[in-house]
Length: 184
Ligand SMILES: CC(C)(COP(=O)(O)OP(=O)(O)OC[C@H]1O[C@@H](n2cnc3c(N)ncnc32)[C@H](O)[C@@H]1OP(=O)(O)O)[C@@H](O)C(=O)NCCC(=O)NCCS
Image 1 (tube, rainbow, N blue to C red):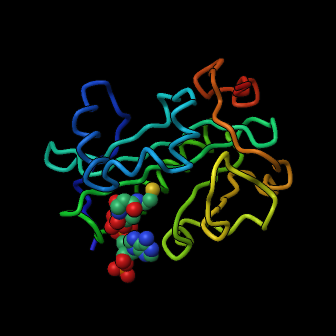
Image 2 (cartoon, rainbow, N blue to C red; image 1 turned 90 degrees about the horizontal axis):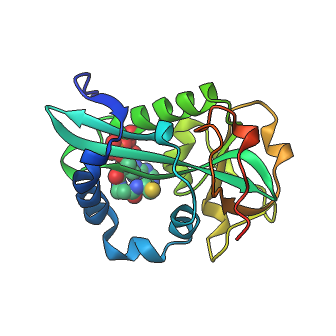
């Protein structure tokens, strides 16, 4: 069943408390120890790629896409967290939010999206396992959960090596190739 009345919009500073609650409920304090969190905490946020989903005035879902470089090459994104509140799960909202985010990212010129997550869920949005050894995160991760989706056909071939958050956005994601790499 779908919920057509749910709307997707960009996050604003006023949403932060609601988003914090959503995160806390979904992942608890353990989220800070996740390797993907470590990449995100050092990265600049692209305000055009942080979304929330509203239903009857309540935030029921959220999705962040964080600019990263892989082996020093910019133009890629780390997807996550993707969250739908417990009361509204299994209504297609997560997939809808994710497909919306991927479309926006593609329109902004990004080329590749990676994530750490369960293949049986993300395969629905076209994600596949990254070939073993091709990329690494700055921390432990189950290689079977390291997934990618190409926004531009063949983009995976351009990316290999260490995944890092971008420290600066030169043009808020409009010109992905001009992003500066996280030098830390
Ligand atoms: C994962 C999540 C975003 C999915 O949101 P959702 O709105 O329920 O997703 P959809 O309605 O698009 O899809 C629901 C389907 O995905 C399945 N699914 C959900 N999480 C899954 C997972 N980790 N692995 C495999 N299947 C999963 C559900 O069982 C359901 O299956 P069905 O269609 O056969 O009933 C939501 O469950 C959530 O917020 N979970 C907690 C946070 C989390 O783990 N986020 C992902 C990691 S960043």
